[in-house]
Image: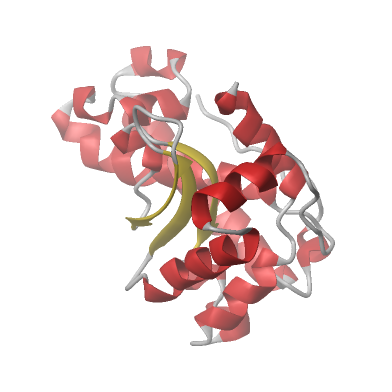
Length: 204
């Protein structure tokens, strides 16, 4: 059975970027719901419990048809949120000079250009979904991409380096319809050391 991944900090520690109310609901209701629904579905075919959830998503087309949509939606919800929990800090952070910043700057024409493009992708995403920085399938090219609902980059063979949740439940109680303000604030608490660690684990 899959178990919830603990948060690194308390629900209140992500404030003011993310309110305690939002973090509590996000973690205890939405994320726990994805865990429970995924476990219920996979219990029909328990051999799949030997895989990590990301590995299941990589072979989503091999999942039995009667549970495939449930696994797609809820497995994506589990993995996406666990990446998010990993890459958030409780304080304002700054990107430091290093391989990750250098490579991203080369790929997007500068660090500030990367931020602009990432924020623009989040702003343009219609409805529910996520914005990601990924290693593109079959290459080590860096790419900004969006996924709808709880779809994961793993499903298309991409490796997610980090992502931001753009579902309304991630921000609406605090930011109302001002999604752009949410994107600006959550950007401030990205744990760039953790992001760089994910990046280097696949670059080398």
